[in-house]
Image 1 (cartoon, protein in one colour):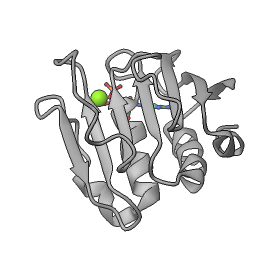
Image 2: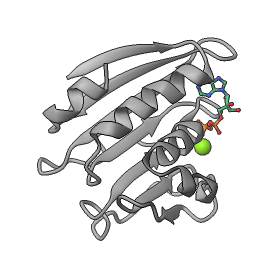
Image 3: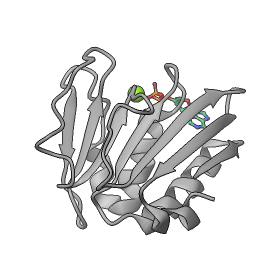
Length: 146
Ligand SMILES: Nc1ncnc2c1ncn2[C@@H]1O[C@H](COP(=O)(O)OP(=O)(O)O)[C@@H](O)[C@H]1O
Ligand SMILES: [Mg+2]
């Protein structure tokens, strides 16, 4: 499934992310692509906060650490930033929590057994973004990506 979502403000992004969070089971892979300041880390913060408001403070950009792990009341969240590292061994974490990868590429994880949500952020204005979304394997997520 492919869909395009126009986001006009931070508040709209938050609403979209809150809706998405309601469908998550905790083993999905979310691939985020987009230039600097496109909103990948902001998306991640909103998402972790929607999963567990008390977990939001843990979220920061893992540019230097490559991977941060956040504890939430529902499931672990692995937040990865590939800006500096192009290769990363995902084998230990896939399926063991929600995996969110910044600076991802569409086909970087070729797996049929887990749902993959790819989101390409385009900056179209100071507060406006276009999200191009591709979903693989997780039909139950469709209604939360509209
Ligand atoms: N609609 C929007 N969606 C995402 N970010 C937005 C939006 N409007 C403004 N911003 C701002 O753009 C910046 C995005 O930065 P960040 O999330 O760190 O991007 P990235 O991780 O992609 O480099 C933040 O300062 C955020 O407040
Ligand atoms: Mg970032």
